[in-house]
Every structure is written in structure tokens, then in C-alpha cells.
Image 1 (cartoon, rainbow, N blue to C red):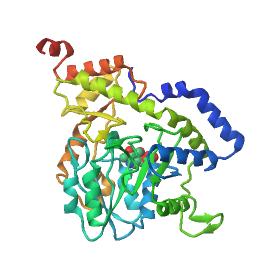
Image 2: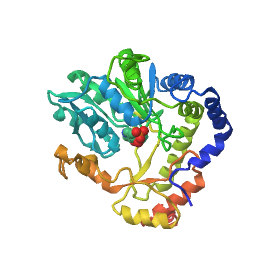
Image 3: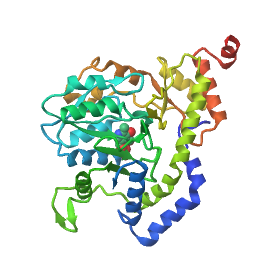
Image 4: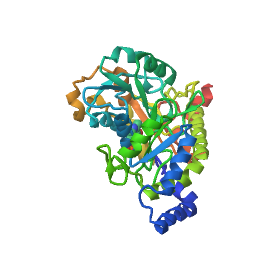
Length: 375
Ligand SMILES: Cc1ncc(COP(=O)(O)O)c(C=O)c1O
């Protein structure tokens, strides 16, 4: 049995430290925000090459508050992609603004910068590129368009802890970066968590207030805020895990390297790491036009896979009111029909990659022996 992710293996490897960190919170009773959260904010911001980090309860709240801090709301438009997790789009809707979609580049699964200009209207305020699967969007052209047109860029870095674009870390390239610490993420809490990173002190100040009922100091509410605080236990656990993140990322990259090598010549499209990128492989997605059959066949052999994501947001019933139709974003729609995420987690062994790749090659009609014989 090869799981899709293995959180138990990871916990086993850091159990003593994590247990001590949680015990520390039980002893201090700093259950929400507090010194561990503050220390984690500083450490994660530094890791992400940003000046400030503001811990919140989820990645969704990070996006929501980043948009509010930028004063985005009713009557405004925000450009993003339909091939993302629903939260990117929901966060835009929470503010009252309208999401406007542009298609992805099928090679990278991220925003096609050449489509942005045509989507800009006088109402456009911001662009949210999504660093899907752990590779940053092509940020150079996106930042250039944003600068030229006076737009803000909020990175959805929820899948991209430690990812880099030409040496710059995700979360430090746009005006703000939004991270999720959902348990299955590359840096996952033992519960929910999120963070906004920014080097703009004004945004940071506003988000700090908004996450805690809009209070400037206790009971002095200067903004209509929210209860989006990060819990002390999550801050303490995340501090421990952050110390391991680089090692885990390198292990993911190594596993991706095994898959790339083992699937080469099979005709199965594998992820492309762009020359500008340090891909952190939150997800390792292959493509197949027989996805249902492949997923079932792999499951029958004890190999768990995932689909990220089967329906692009513009075709989800919840967003029918936006008025989009099938066929408008062909690359997103095709990707949604074809992507299949293989097991990917830092503890994945080379032998497990071999077993998965052997099964995938057999499904593709290019079994290992045959490929070797014809090579
Ligand atoms: C691309 C993307 N955006 C936003 C989110 C929302 O994060 P959360 O689940 O922490 O609210 C996630 C993860 O779930 C995500 O993958």
C-alpha cells in the first residue's frame, strides 16, 4: 500500500519535539496568538524573504484579509485562474469583488501572463496568480503588467512554501503572499493555519488588526474585523516543522527526480520545472486521457492517487452566477479532465517511486522491460 501522503510517518520522525512544543503551550496557556505564534511569524517571514508575517486561521483567511487590506471590495475586479482550489475564488467573492478568470499555460498549470491584458478593465484592482502544485507562476511578466497598469499582485502561495522564482521566494515577489498550513501542505499544522507575508508595513498593520476583530489595542476596534487568529498550538508545532522544511523539500524534489527518470520515454506527460523555478512539488501531477481507468487500476494495486482539481472553478455550480460557460478556458478544462496526482511526500522512497512508475508505465503501454529493450 502506497499512500498519497503519509502524515503519520512524518509525525513519527519528529514526535518528541512536537509533543514538547504542544506541552509548552499547555503549560503557558497561550492558546491563541502569543509568543510562539509571534516567533513563528518572524521565522516564516524570514524563510520566505518577506519582512513581515501575519498568522491567521487558514489560507483562505489569508487571501481574504490580503484583499481587504488592499481595500478591494464591491465594484472591483480581481484577475485569477479557474484552475485552482475553490478558496482562491471564494476569498475574492467574500470581499464583494468579482473574480475575472484568465486561462493557464498548459505546460506549467499556472496563469498565462499573455492573457492578462485582455482581461483588464477600469474596475480591475488586483491579480492573484496561483503557484499551483508548488511552482510559482511566471512572475516576471505578471509583475511587469501589474506595474504598467497600476494593479496589485497577491500571490496565492498556499501550495508553494519555499518555492522560488529566479531565486526569490514565493510570498516575497508580489505585494502580499498568502500561505496555507492545512495538514497536508508542505508545511502543515496539526489543525488549520495560514499566513500573509508582506514587506509593506501598512498592509501588515491592517491585517494584524483585521484578524483580531479590527482592534488597534484591546477593545479599541478601529475596523470591522474578524476572528481569524492563529492558535498557539499551531504556531508551536509549525515552528518545529519549519526547521525541517528545507530537508523535506529536497526529499520531495528527489522523489520528483525519481519519477521523472522512471517515467521518461513512457509518453506520459510529467511536470515541467521551468528554468526560473525551484519547484517544491506539493503535488506531482501527470496527465492521462484515461484518468478514471488509471486511477482505479492504481488503487487496485494499492497505490493511492489524487485529482487536483477535477472541475475548474468557472464550471462549479457555486459560481454559475459569474456567467462563464464550458469552452471559455480550454487549457484549464483539459487539465481538469486529465491531471492525476501521484503519491508525493518527503518520506516516499525510491523503491516506492519505482513501484508507482512501473504501474503507470504498464498502463501507458510502455512497461519497464519493453522500454529498456527498445532503448
Ligand atoms: C491554491 C490554494 N489556495 C487556497 C487554499 C486555502 O487554504 P486553507 O485550506 O488553509 O483555507 C488552498 C488550500 O487548501 C490552496 O491549495
